Image 1 (spheres, rainbow, N blue to C red):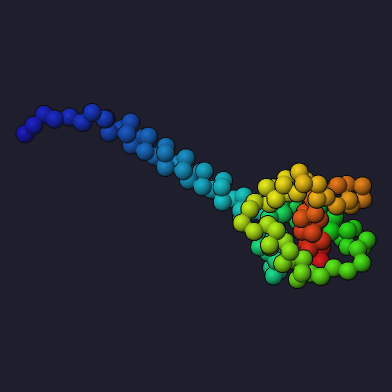
Image 2: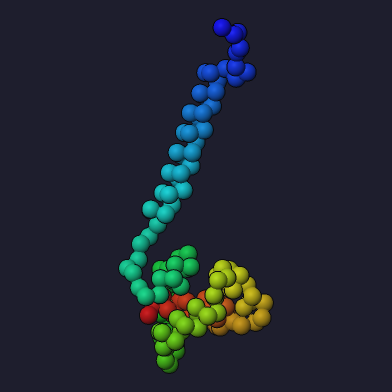
Length: 125
């Protein structure tokens, strides 16, 4: 029989392994809790667009005000414009580019990128 002994002692190795396992369980729980506990909205045909809005309730309020001061609003037309305009980019990138280009809309004294205004109107419709 050989007298070979492992370089790593068993108890510290197992303690480290269980600590790593515990941290991964806690991290996964915290990560998933944010998705589970977030506010749910009724499904719409425009969820691919509306899910990009972090606070849909506030967007609805802005959209309602904007729609009250707009003559006509074509929901499906606006959705097509938004899908084409946003494409595969992130919403913050699109809004930043619009602000840099000066494509802004005034709503009650606030200047907002046009895409954000249309998203708010779509949320309110």
